[in-house]
Image (cartoon, rainbow, N blue to C red):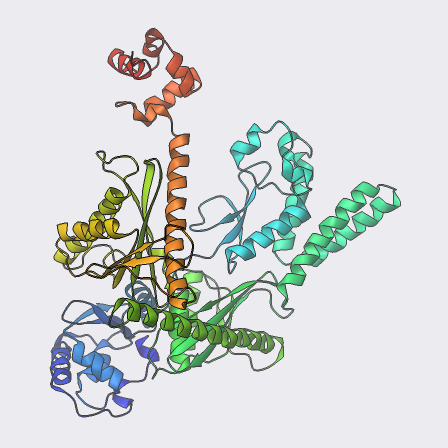
Length: 638
């Protein structure tokens, strides 16, 4: 956030400006004549068109004028100015609108000189549906388009799953889909283990189920104590009436509710809804720990590790992080911080507009709120220490990989490839990606093998197809000056393939076909005994070699290979399951979704269609005589 960083004219004086800095300042100064003296957002781009920095200003003219001065800048700002070849400006109606737009652009573009962080998933919620007589309770991600009451966000899928477990045991709500619900003739296993009231088979009527739903809503909106007290009274009454079975069921429900309170640890009494942010920092490395409190309950926490320059203050880092964090999320009524941030009131106003309710940003000094913020800070401190230890270990492993394969510098992107199939059927190729931050699961890719002339089970030909498609796209995107998919348009420093000399030669041939002859490719082959620790490594122009069985680098390379194997098998299983469940009608030319539905409705199943006579097929609405003949011939090839 530009307004959150010190005015470049007031930052510590750097060395005398270089020619590049003078050229960049002159290029920036050329924009001053046409800039308005009003709020807006600006982008600084280098000669390649890459966005270096996104900032906002209450006055674009004054802000850009500060960058146009060639001296009195910090090293970071001076370097950014020297790389600037172009600027893009967007005027806004207000500074608040500029702040919202700036946060959106930073999160989307991830400029090098801004604070940014990786946030690849939406937070899960619990959805209690309202579009059914017996509402289903389920985990939900993404747009809130289904009818019902949403509770969240939860910090992780694990937090949601634990809460759903509690809801099932405490309130006996169904979790099955509508199709399963309608098709049941007797209670399922969940009813037998006392996690569902079995409304599907009439074990509970609509009125009784509605009472359970109301209790669950009260629990999720912070009235859990009231619900427990009511259940305790009902248990006592059942016990006095000698109905010990009902009393035992109520006791189990009370225990389930008590367990979630025990797991949550911190449950505030001075507020019911808040997000708590605590920043701990060591140099250029930071951890922001986020705690979510809803309905007076702790719904989990999650750490983030924003990327930023070392010369930014804690408040600047945290302020920029908050703007991006709430870019696509609704802020609660209270946000608690351990550090004050610049323009706190402006950010609160922006979040207020987006959330459509009042948002307060506070830095508590004492009391329960301060204790909760301190607890979050303690978590941030411990998490950063763990992350630094893991990063140091990861760096050491990558340095070991570089030394093993003669790379300089250590690889930042390793791509590993593997195939999976059963005698050539449902063949799938897989690519996983690893680097300094571990496995980059958002960049994994699956390849459905498309070549029809492959010999079933020909692993070498499959590998060649996968590599040709992957690197062919890389070359095309490079020729198009990087206009392709951002996650695809990245070149690996090291390519690992599953196999020996033959697979290695096939990989080099595949890359040569698309014009690449300088890639570092290594084949990883198990020994004849197929024992872990006895793998042979193959590189073109070198004799096969092995690593010491106790080498950490060997263990790391095994992990990479096993992860690729796991991912490939998962893709194959999904493809096989889809093929098993597919209807043969989908293979008949001319039978689309509409005609398929008409055929299945008329004959009841694909088997019914297969057994139908030509005359019967012709009676189906939308099926012509010619199509009926085509369908009949498909099922009767003789």
